[in-house]
Image (cartoon, rainbow, N blue to C red):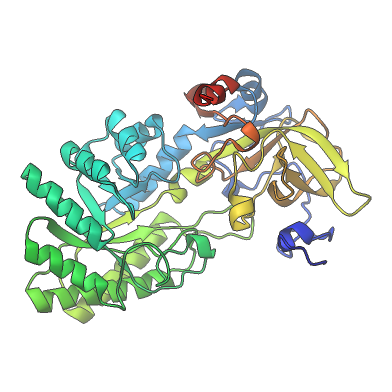
Length: 461
C-alpha cells in the first residue's frame, strides 16, 4: 500500500478484499440479515421487494432511488414496542424523516425525537401528537424553543446553561412549565467511529459529568423551579454492538441521580439511555435483537438502581438506525465498468456520495448485489463508485459482483435507510433521489426526486 495525503482509502491498490469478505458460493444469493424482510430474488432473476420487481420500480421512478419496505419498517417498530412494552421508544428522526415515516411510527405507537426546527415542523405537519415528541439539539434557537413550547412538545433535552436560561425565560413569558431532561456527557468511549461517538468528554454535546456541569445543571433547574426536571439523558454514540458502554453509562448517570437525591431530596422519575444500536451493513456485523437489548438494559438499570438504593426510573430509548436502516435499499443503474489491469474493477453507478456520504465520511462498509437479473458468471471483486468529481466518491468499497456486470444493469445497496437521504447533498449540482415506499406489491412516492428546476429556483443570482 502506498501513502496518500487523503488517506489509505484512496491509496489502497490491493485487489484483495477485507479479511471478513468471503467469495460467495452463489453470487446471486441474498444475505437475509442485510435486506428488508420482504426482499427476494424472483424466478426471472430480478430482486423484488414486497412482490414488486426492482425493474418495475426503476422504470416508474428512475434511478437512483431509495426503496423503503413499509411492512419491514413497521415490523421493526413493533419489535421494539414489544421488547420495551412499559418503556418509551422514541424513533430518532435524524436517521430519516419525512411525513409518511412520521405517520408510520406514530401509528405503530412510537414516540419521536427531533433535533431541529425543520424536523419539528415535519413532525407537526404530519400529525405527530406533540406530547410524544422529544426535542434534542446542542444549539436550539430562541425561535425553535418558542415553537416547541407553543406546540406543547412533551420533553426538551437541555444541552447547555445558555439553553436553560433561554428556555426558562421563554417558559416564564408563556406561563408554562415544560418537561426537561439534562443531557449528560458520561465519558464513555463508545467503540465506533470518532465522529459518531457522543459521550466522550471532548465533544459538543451535553453537560460534563466528570467536571460537575451535569450536576450543576440539574441543581440550577431545580432551584429556579420554572422548568420541570424529569430526569437525565445519556447517548454514547451510534452503530454500537457492545452493551458494555451502556452499562458504564447507566452506572454513571444513576450515580448522578443519587447525588441529586442526596443534595436536593428529589428522586428523578425518568432515565433515557439514548440509542445508537447497530445494524448489519455487511456479513461482519452481528447486531442484537430488540429483545436482547431490552434484557440487557433492564438488567443494567435494575442492578445499578439497587446499588444506589434508587427506585427504578421510567426508561426511554431512542432507536433510529435500527428501525429504518435495514428497511431501505438504494437502487442504482450501472453506467460504466472499468478494469484497471487486474488492480481493481470499478463499477460506476448513477449516484454516489451525494446520496450516501457515509462511506467517505465514516469509512463505512456496505454490501451490494446485481439486482436486475441473475448471473452464471464467476464472482468478481469490485468497487462500486459514484459519478461525482471526487476520488473518494465510493459507495461500496469491496463487494463480489458477477464478472459480467455491465452498463444498464441495476445494482442494489442494502442498509441505506439511516443517514443516507438525511445527509444527502447536491454536490456537483446533482438532484437528490426520491424515496419510494413499497407495500403489498404497490409502490408510492413519499419524497419526490429533486429536479434541475428545483436547483435553479434557489439560485437568485
